[in-house]
Length: 246
Image 1 (cartoon, rainbow, N blue to C red):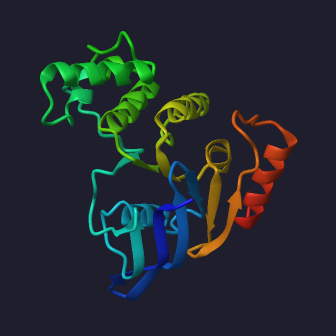
Image 2 (cartoon, rainbow, N blue to C red):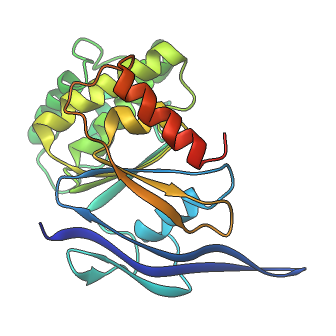
């Protein structure tokens, strides 16, 4: 299968008062069209830096990143970032938040798309609610819908559910899987949560401590839906935690 995302021998070095700080060293991997790849690693190892480079928000120092065989030189409409900070406008209703990025379309079409994606993420009936009238889980649904409504080919996800409680995180993961079964996006996810990575991803990239290199790339051998308490799931989780030194 052709690579949707290709990262080749990527290095990132930051200048500091104490000299160069190497963050990424020789990162090399691909993500296929429609594949879900998760990146895990120790805190501060450079996972978000890697995501930002692949998404075009900062450059690498050596190596190459390409999407559809075209070198990445900046952010592209092909991809959108969903982060833990959130980007929902508090002064706009759910519907108006979803309509915000739909430039160049007739108002009626904007509203139709906004309402379609509100329903897709389980927010039907809350289109006129303001963010302060919704829960944290509902706000994250708005965030996901805002990403999907502009029809990106790639979702770059940076700890998107980290701020939610444990039960809501599991519910959001199940919701994301349901949506991806319909929408068919390519996904690159950064997460500290090994269970989340196994629950969602087709493959998992395990990074070393900084300067980060790829320790291993594991294929998740379980079909969806995945039972989080199965012996095989727990065994894979323990294997990854061992590789992370836990």
